[in-house]
Length: 163
Image (cartoon, rainbow, N blue to C red):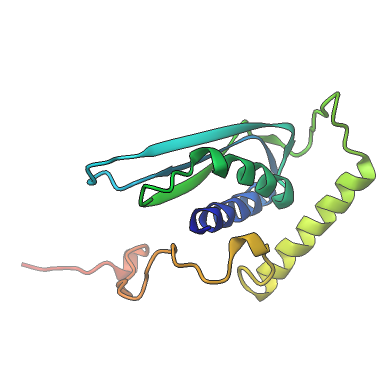
């Protein structure tokens, strides 16, 4: 369940980035691994080519859920998990699949839904609206309580030492 939550959160964030970049993903890959320092190293990935490229969180979550079953092994203590969106293309051109034609009306409803969710999250903060599969208690998330408040991303904030 923890792996499912972690992957789902990554998929939600990746789909937001796809939409903000006006792109669609044609393929999704998920991966996981144990620590490289363990005696029983385990690493696995699984991919799925989407019939119709998408940036819809619903579609990408469904695809990733199918892939999780392929990479999960109960006997390993997993350390890292992630998502790759591949075969990216512009949102301006969408090649439909001959066997799975998505109606224009259904596609428009999906776009409006995703735009609404993105706007609410932008306005009220990340994860204001999210999916249940992402979970509420994120035990897998990076611990940040001991992170340094120092910022070195601005030139003015870099310390100067004189000898």
